[in-house]
Amino acid sequence: MKVLISGGGIAGLTLAYWLHHWGHTPVVVERAPHGRLGGYGIDFFGTGYDVAARMGIADRLAEHQLPADSICYVDGEGRVTARLERRLLEKVIRGPYLALMHTTLEEALGEAVRDEVEIRYGHRVAAVGQRADGVDVTFADGGDESFDLLVGADGVHSATRGLAFGPEERFARHLGYAMACYPVPDVYGLGPRRVHYGEPGRQTVLYPTGRPGELIALFLHRTADPSVPRRSERPGALRSAFADMGWLTSRLLAEAPRDDLFMDGLTQIAMPSWHNGRIALVGDACGAMTLASAQGASMAMAGGYLLARALHQHDDHRAALRSYEARLRPAVRRRQRRARAFARSLVPETGIGLAAQSTVTRLMLRDAFTGLLRRGYGDTTSILTRV
Image (cartoon, rainbow, N blue to C red; front, side, top):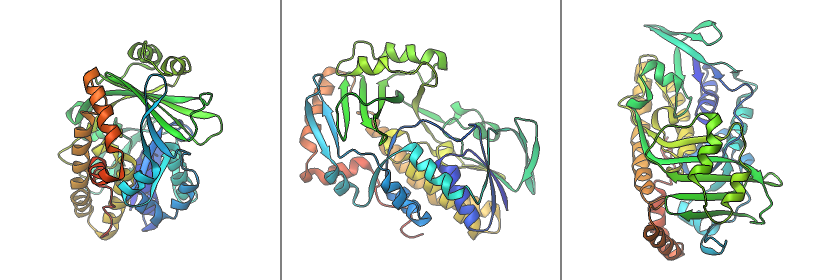
């Protein structure tokens, strides 16, 4: 079976690997000219780690995990008010845990398929048409080609989903936050820590990337507006949202790039169906959970693996797509539900709420509360234990 995968990120590359592994012919198109650049830190455990181990890349990922041995919460003077040690986090997860840069995982997946799978960078799907026995695709450069299946793995703002299922607003659920991130020079002497500083309605986070002399600055703030500013307006919008914020925030804002500043809303995607004829979706394109879930990358890999496995097990693509969705959808729904609940208290709106959060955090980050912390992280075990 010849399968076009629109999107060369985590879900798309995982799907390509397993399709090739089970004898299909995947073709990946990625609109970025040389693969995706930039990125942010992710928590990686559970199902994602299981899939990575089956692919033989878990050890490589472990060699490139972020050099952070704790997560610290600080006040405006940089004094630590609460600390989550890596030891306790691993106890909460009850299994292997890696802190990675998003691009580290994508690079490992890219290397795993590079010699086996055709990847066309700088390409994107412009139009699709379905027949009983295939999908006709027109690319943005004007070329036409036919495939047995088309899979949209192109993220929360999936163009494939828009072509085959309808506009994003039908499926988007905005969680009430916007985020931005970018690399900054490591001149702050934080050491191997991820540091959080909060004020009512907004939060600044700083952590090492593993590259000498580099940190990631991440900004999160409450907003009812789900729209994302145009690229030229993003630096100004970020400075406005975080004006006069304490700790290191003003120095970090001064380092914001003028171009290519990553900014987005925290948006989940919920759909009545993940497939339409010979077109299917995987990863954030159909089940985005946001960073509030801490499991987006893991579930993207789960989707790629389970979709390829279903196509391997079923001769009929319709049965395969139903099986894939039935297996994965309940797990995605649970994680989305937990992420929505967590997001409500992620960044308190008031000073009283922030003080209460600080007190609870200081009390909870202890071994005695491992069970409650585990509930906060949601389903941490692999959904592939019986697959």
